[in-house]
Amino acid sequence: MHKLTRGNRDKVQQFMTITGASEKAALQALKASDWHLEGAFDVFYSHPQIKTFTDSRHLEELYNRYKDPYVDMILVDGITLLCNDLQVDPQDIVMLVVSWHMKAATMCEFSKQEFIGGLQALGIDSLEKFRERIPFMRSELKDEQKFREIYNFAFGWAKEKGQKSLALDTAIGMWQLLFAEKQWPLVDHWCQFLQAGLQALNFSLMGTIPTFALVHLLQSADYPFSNARISILAFSSRRHSS
Image 1 (cartoon, rainbow, N blue to C red):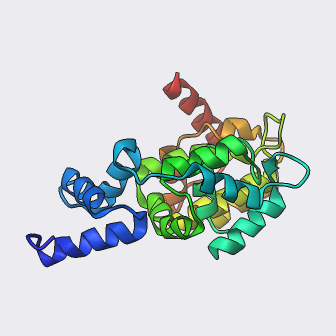
Image 2 (cartoon, rainbow, N blue to C red):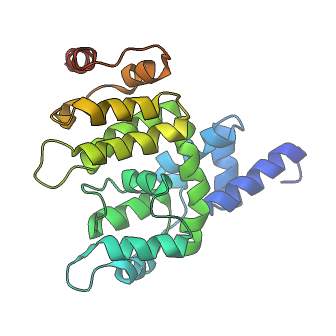
């Protein structure tokens, strides 16, 4: 690294600290992203050939630490223990990002395939590496494309098993969690509006409203919330997606 500028050396060290990658892998990812750190993270995690090796035995040990004693899954108690080990609050939005990476089908549950597959994709096979990835996963919320993907994932993930609609309180909790991160001004007004008169709304339909439409609604300080306008947003998004 002696030929690198001081700034680039610092980026290599920061990249290695966060990802657990070797110096060679760090240089490869940073050069591929023209020395943009966040771009290098994307390169690193989207190209398996430059990820760090994960030990399947260590992954099994991690899974067994958190899995339920009676069911071959990680359930609420196991996730609580995982959060304690990671020193992360269970209500922290980064746990939603973790679930997104694991492609979890249901909130507060990880199947063995979801848990181990997600950790392999992230290059994690120890608690230390898991803790080191938390800042990277938190930074993904600042990427507009990834935020949209996480937003769309959240509404399917939060539904009760076998239900097509999302409970009002759960939907409001998701919006408060997601939009608090973006610091959009009308989140509280939006949630109050829902509580006042939209209990019967099909929230599987609300999940289809694209992020750009809801962002526009929440950023417009004088936007008049109404059932009709929300139905138009949902209908328009369906036509857009089809």
